[in-house]
Image (cartoon, rainbow, N blue to C red; front, side, top):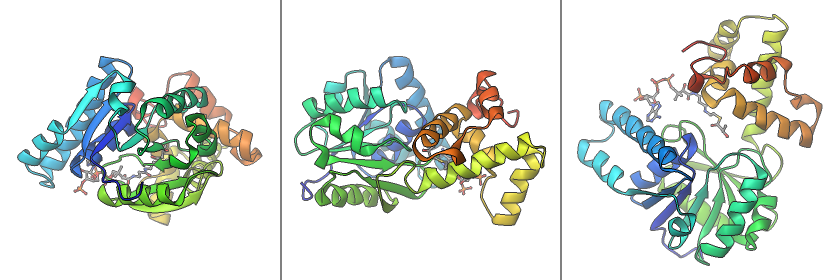
Length: 285
Ligand code: 3HC
């Protein structure tokens, strides 16, 4: 399998991560199809790609011809079967629910070609459990991307219990092709990145609860004192408070007390203060 060229990439899910993955795959010269469950979601995804390409155009990172080529390389569909039937790589970026992932990988086992690399962009769920549903766990790998996908250099490759060496090699080759730097980690709750990233966000929220400092000062402290590009609360707003709460709940169950979600986070999610996408989180946009 490792010798197979990657021509076509199918991305399942047109959300923030899915459309970013589609964009970087198309930019690397792959033919891309994005699948989501309705046309409105696909349109939002294409609009997101349009915005990102406009930024790259404004910075003269790409020219108009290249932007058009990237747009032209991305097709959309609502049919999972059509999306994956001739794919060389499938990247799943659907919501972080194990029941949905299991259903999707069961379908991939049935409809994706036997040579296809089957990847999940889960940020913390068990790759091994997702892989088991496909019936071909050797071909399944975690490919964890970071937001904003066109900007962040890292690709965290997660090796499930049954992931083969050939699959890891192929995942690395895909990562190289799309211009990412890879690290390979063992399948363990939260992997390397979410486990550390979430604990920082979790503590920052507890500090707001305890009145240690304002969100702006906590963020300023980490940016100027630790050179983080963004403070932990700004980052929580970027990723989405609901997304972070969900990951925390999972890591709390799997790894214990240190990941117990702060009450303030639950309250803010209940109030709809989900971060940038909702116009308000720890900051107002
Ligand atoms: N597409 C293309 N280019 C983009 C972009 C996008 N969506 N978003 C930003 N950019 C470009 C900008 O044009 C700019 O280009 P330049 O360097 O040529 O000027 C550059 O990226 C920096 O952007 P800005 O000048 O607008 O703003 P900043 O300098 O503040 O950078 C940031 C923004 C890149 C988001 C930076 O603050 C950052 O790196 N923040 C940390 C992000 C992070 O930690 N992400 C990981 C989240 S966790 C995750 O994703 C895991 C998941 O499982 C939850």
